[in-house]
Length: 216
Figure 1 (cartoon, helix red, strand yellow):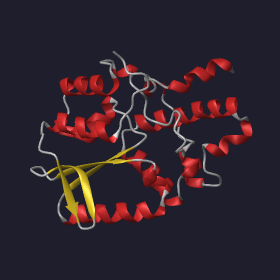
Figure 2 (tube, helix red, strand yellow):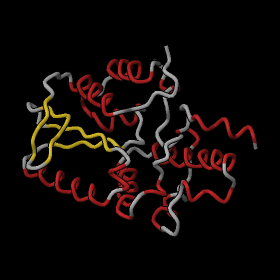
Figure 3 (tube, rainbow, N blue to C red):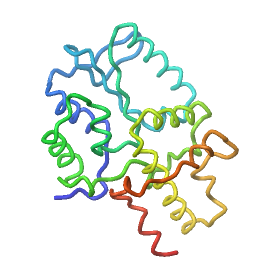
Figure 4 (cartoon, rainbow, N blue to C red):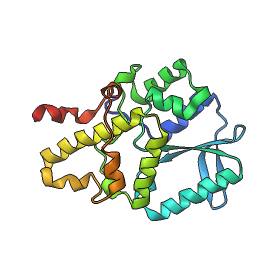
């Protein structure tokens, strides 16, 4: 049964990392004053789910940089999963690379989203979360842009499209003068990112704010 608007979480990341790596020996790994919550000691691979506080809190930027440096020092591969990512096939191949397989992918989306159809899963981007780029620090915005530069190109279209739909939601609820709830003001880097062209071929997913299009 399809789970309505189900999405990736830290708990789901632990499940799918075990599934794709075919490993159950997950442990918490102490790293100086930090810890890695999803760690595969035999492979020296760690996964971190980066929630909104990794983008909107200055203290957390310092923590993440230190953790990155410590992982490099200990030769641990640290894989970060931004909170606006979803498990599209492009993302699964990007994150898990040689460990990806169609069978694993089908099991993963069935468990996380309750559907075996990729087109039915929630699209990457923001759909209803109040943790929008308007809340990001300047470093958080740079991190967000760099996340997407490194990710498959399909995510740029998906994220920007989700923002355009979010605009419609805000306009209906508050009016056109409230887009500052979504977008950072006077940030050229973010403005330049939003100029990227959307590829319609990358939009075959569940964008829950599409319902607002029919009202305009």
